[in-house]
Image 1 (tube, one colour):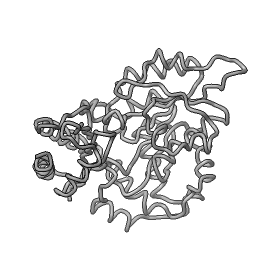
Image 2 (image 1 turned 90 degrees about the vertical axis):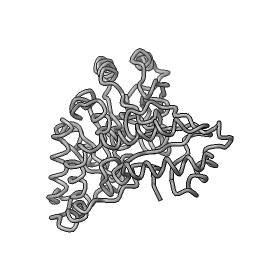
Image 3 (image 1 turned 120 degrees about the vertical axis):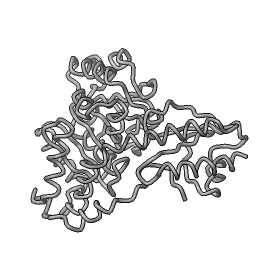
Image 4 (image 1 turned 135 degrees about the vertical axis):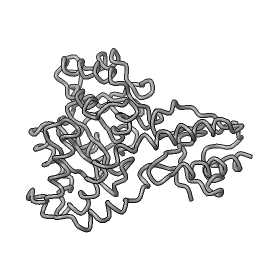
Length: 340
């Protein structure tokens, strides 16, 4: 089975497995796990921030950022189809007690003028704008890499209004690869950033939240409140360090495979690629095959290909470390059979 549902399905490499087995560990709640400490120090350096915190998932990292930046009754500004709004089970309201103010973006990028307009004036009727959240790459925009200039403009507006900026950078390293920039060039336009180790980088579990030392000290307490204070967690940090230091450079290969997949699928009658393929996500519309997305996904599954629905007639394919160019060729042939 060729699994193109998500880059979360990757299996850890042999080096990651070996690193987990050999990891020197200690109690991280006491700050005594060497592997965790090394991962956090390395991540902070790569992301251009003072400090970093290992968290169990991207959702936990994003929600700890909201909890740390905001207070109950605040409003956060974010793109209308962002992961924080769309896929994190309403946690911002359930845990942090904040409400969301959404802005419809273009390929995941919010218009800075609309962000400026969304910032609340001082008025007893209004909540206070507590945080602006960006997402790069933007999942539901088809893995779009949000331009640096857009991030820069929004960051400038935020600073002018004393509002912090958080980047949901679950696939930030994909954005960096697509834009041919170091990740620190992107993170200079935020106060905090979350990056996933378990997506394109291929680690089995975990994410990183990075920011100032003061922020991370507060975030560490929120992690503990959420049950994220782990003990000998170097066993999962060690594979994460391998992912962070050795898997970033190969992301361009996933992007090339995605572009090739898109080009070939676009030539199949009844299938239309509807996103600009910047990174490792391809979104296809299949309504002209006279079936909905769920029917199409079941059809290609019977041919040995796994994909995910992404709307009533849209299907998402995600390339990753465990899918070779040969696998892509086989997937294209299988999808062609299904379409016929």
